[in-house]
Length: 79
Image 1: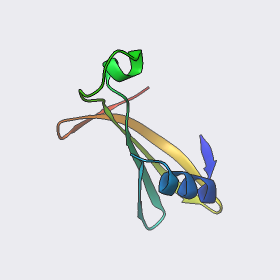
Image 2: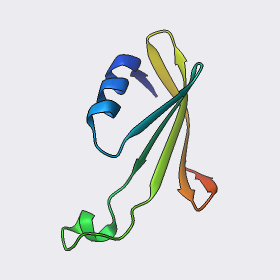
Image 3: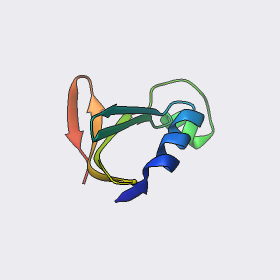
């Protein structure tokens, strides 16, 4: 999947809970899903899951190549 880099950067800067990390041409977007209670609208609190998307900046775009759920210190790839 490809996303325009400038749009991604503006989104991450303006959206609470999204973190954009960059190392050279490597890009990592990290965010948390809502907890089950929050998603169902029946409560707040609890913990969502941390999602990690990794990609490569190619020109004006970021091509995401890896998606995972972080569990503790381990990453479990998403299909």
